[in-house]
Image (tube, rainbow over all chains, first blue to last red; front, top):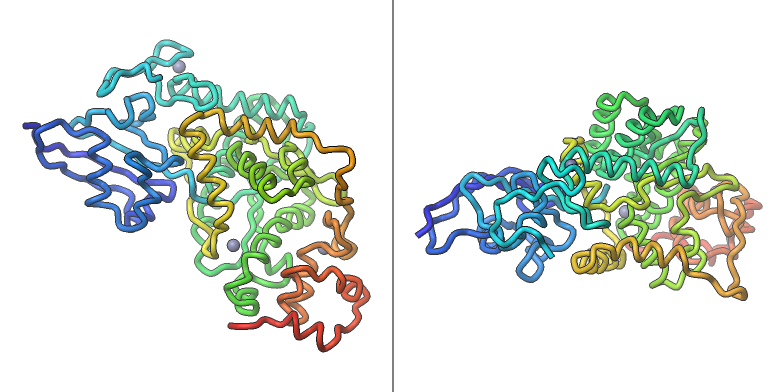
Length: 101
Length: 350
Ligand SMILES: [Zn+2]
Ligand SMILES: [Zn+2]
Ligand SMILES: [Zn+2]
């Protein structure tokens, strides 16, 4: 069993509008048999945090193209994306590039 | 393919300096860069764009179209940096438009005002009220919500030019990025608008009548612009236009983002296609003239904004919506319209 982990999630660039306008979320993921990875985190966000129009955040089983993901302030493309194994106290940021500028 | 294996927490080294750990993978090149190397590469590429297209001359006053959004915020920051680093000798000013939509611009204008202080650049805000004699709110009141985006788009397109003329600006820079240009290429292609397709990739547009406009971020990816703003902790504002977004454009953008996720070079590839498309000799191109009333570039006798304004001022808001070119001569001569013509142009349902 993997112990529960706490994460800091941040939504910006307009992505927060899908989360009641709330940018910062401190969340605790429950313990489960396997370690948490990004793929499972996205499902958890969809089931627990997303307030509206999930298709604007998730497409298939990944984030919608145009939403950038940073794990501990680094591009998730450098970290294995969906397979990245989350650690206690990780900081995950989602920034939409799809909103007006 | 990714150098880092799954579940890796090992930092990827910067492919430029080999010292620090990388913070992003660049979509254009696939390089992994650390923060300082990314900042330098991003800024110097914009400088390359500016230098190779000879966008500016020393002593010019350059208005930066500032909306408070990510693109114009990054543009203002980078131009300020490059103006000092490379001695462009430009007089930079932030230029903002207040459409007069209650609640909509408040936050973004606040952002622009903070940018003014953060970057130490002068700021000029011109309002629709000053430019057109109408606020967007007053227009919506007259035309209803259904047709207002026609006004929104046309007035917005001209507002920067009109504001810049008022202020004696030599050139206007806008924050259009590579994704925006690719989207416009695609849109013009989908609409079969050959004239615009040919013009839309030009880095500088508008020479007769209008103030030249340029896009120094033309080759900068949206991803990098957003990450530049994020890592530099630049202050920007994001929102959708409160009045209905354009669904067709939305599909075009989503399509490009899907392509980019499979092949990151798709964005610049589309731009290059647009740049290299040649038009058959016998395709008739519309003649670019200027508006007889305000001097703005227009293929008709009256530009779209002047027609819309005329409609608003005469209480015939539908004048500018749809095709009424036949009536332009009458408007120019300030002749009255017939009862039948007027009936067609009144707002219908409210
Ligand atoms: Zn480096
Ligand atoms: Zn609009
Ligand atoms: Zn005009």
